[in-house]
Length: 222
Image 1 (cartoon, rainbow, N blue to C red):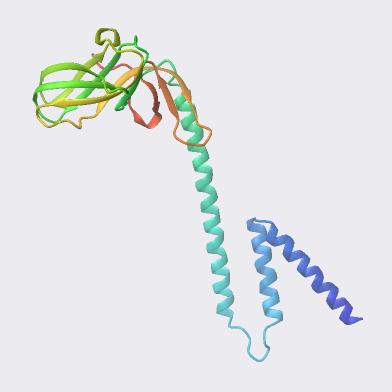
Image 2 (image 1 turned 120 degrees about the vertical axis):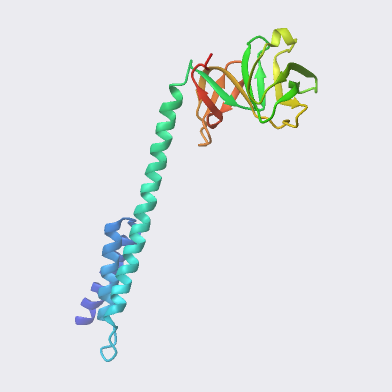
């Protein structure tokens, strides 16, 4: 009789333990730890009992694991919050003028695009070179320029540029051939990729540009 009762009790404990393990919460971890601790105490050798400091160490390890899980959850929640904030902020950019740093554009063959570059050194010759996918080049000569910001515009009609994709580069006689180019236009729409990658802006006259390439929002200073 006693043996059967003990067997049933043990079976019940095993079932409870399985339930606890499948429930990934702080409360279930506490329960599981207490069950394991009680079982350890009950089954220890009476002639060689476990040192009490070992139980304290086990409790400290459990607390550390719980803290790490809580931190991971907080970080995950913060990531979701940041994504939501970015979505709201990007949606407000529609119909606004932005400047973006880019080395390419997808021209519609008609829309004039504002541009600017910043020279590290004065140069006697500064050219903005646009090249289409066939390798045809279109040059915008900017002449002699001092160190600093240089504004220009890309007029596809004036340059005879058909609609298509182009690379944009700056060539100078001072060695500033890796000068970054910024282009400006109105945001037509915002696309949020389903794969969770960077939000993309569709800028008139430029094409799609990653959100993190924005260098200025609003009209440029006169």
